[in-house]
Amino acid sequence: MSRSAHWIDAFLDAQASEQGAARNTLDAYARDLSDFYGWLTQVNLSPSTAQRADIERYLVALEAQGLARSTRARRLSAIRQLYRFAFDDRLRADNPAVQIKGPGREARLPKTLSEGEVDLLLAAARNTGRNARDRCRNTCLMELLYATGMRVSELVSLPVMAARGNPQMLLIRGKGGKERMVPLSPPAREALREWLAMIDAQSELDRARGMLPSPFLFASPGKLGHLTRIRFYTLIKEIAVCGGVSPAKVTPHTLRHAFATHLLANGADLMAIQALLGHADVATTEIYTHVLEARLSALVLEHHPLASGRKEG
Image (cartoon, rainbow, N blue to C red; front, top):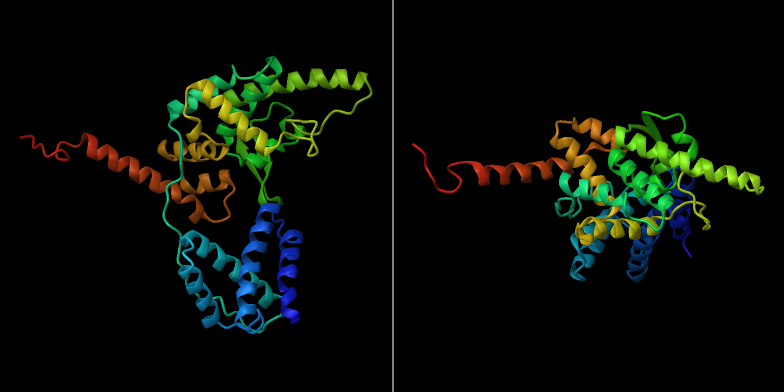
């Protein structure tokens, strides 16, 4: 077996240890690169011998299979990352993927929610839950999510120490261990204060029984020690039903989109939103400008006197 057959394992190890890549990201890289390696093997090539034309042939083969443009773009991105790693680590003297233009991604607007729908969800969170503790937790979860635009993984794993002292800013540890500060709205601070009082009272009871308090703000008895992403996903659907908002429209990510869209609609700077969301590249944040363009276009078509063919004199 060629030595380059082990490139993928070395690349994944580097992504995990040096870049702090999440498990889902590593799994996606592994799937995409395994497919690429399998194709190379079929045509008697390997990562160390493949040239630019070979990689382009692979992309053509993917298109012939009927794979979506987004899937082909993701595969090429993984291949680029692999060859950048190989070049940087001197496993290969050149980078055959560096100048390949991908199929690009289809421009899709992120699904979001109106300010009225968010208000309904926040109100519903106060009434969703089996008991006062659940309702207090749900209120805190939803207020923090909308106030900060956190990723759901960042929200559910928040350490309780990050919330101490009635903070006006919250320190969030994001992808790759990168930290950022986000401001808290007054409703979010109040929800956080009430939830802290609730869990502190429980911690006193736990200590009396010889139990250590959880280090997580949203503790859970499961293996992770905190509320899982899957549990919060189902929880937000329950809140949507309670609030009369279509659960098909509501996910933790649509709340994140709503945070960014509503900020931009109310005059926030795109670079500031990039920092608040924890995007490494402002190009990722620019998708929200398209949301506003669509809204402005609809506004003109609805209200401009010439849009409906009327001409006022």
